[in-house]
Amino acid sequence: MKIGVLIKTTAVDFPSVLAASVFLTGCNLRCPYCYNKALVTNNLSSEEGVTFDEVINHLEKRKNVLKGFVISGGEALLSPHLEPLIREAKKLGYKIKIDTNGTLPFLLEKLIQNSELCPDFIAMDVKTSLEKTELLMPFCDNPEQISKIQESIKESIKIISNFPTEKREFRTVLVPPLVNKSDIEKIATLLPKDASWQFAQFRNENCLDATYNDISPYIEKEALELVEHAKTFIPAANLR
Image (cartoon, rainbow, N blue to C red; front, side, top):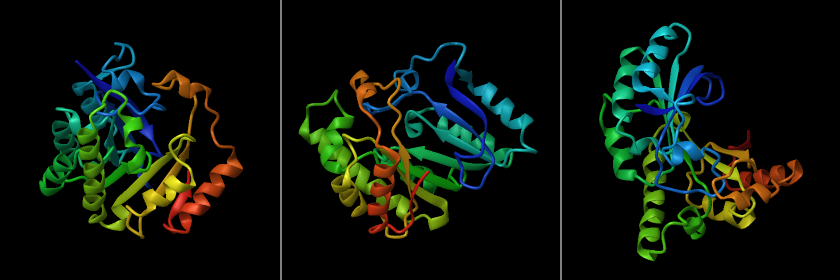
């Protein structure tokens, strides 16, 4: 069974650590700008997907070169393969980084509290201000469910904020309909002041919502101005 997509070597996904990354299938959000359609919809082709054993075999072969293993998605915390992957990778001596959208704080807390599964680094995507959460859930018209997701996001930020500063980061993609100066101000109120807040430019290609392919990314000057604005609240804001 294909469980996701493997990036065999990356120097950018795990801060200061040469790593391999696996992007697992399945997600509980439908972010309109997401370009990982096949992952989100569990529709990987046999050519692009990898099996659990193929991931572990790669880690075994490269354990003398790679030091980190990134587990992302989709939403990694939803996957039944998450815990087995962590256990096998840790046996091989890898440091573990987890990427999450922050909507599953109970699973995140469970992971952290287990000494055999606790990651060495956590990155959380804070996609927009809480007021715009419904834009990430076009399949849902239930205000109560949207409110629960908003509370879950706040709870996950609190959980991750208890991690040492050097072992966590928060990430935001500069998608024009989702992130403007006002959204940045609102997100900043949720984050710890010592947060590493990493911004990335929006890619208007292969978006889950095809209308987002027609949205122009911020020009470099605009993106830098937004990140400078973020720095007034969170000094360690940065545009990658």
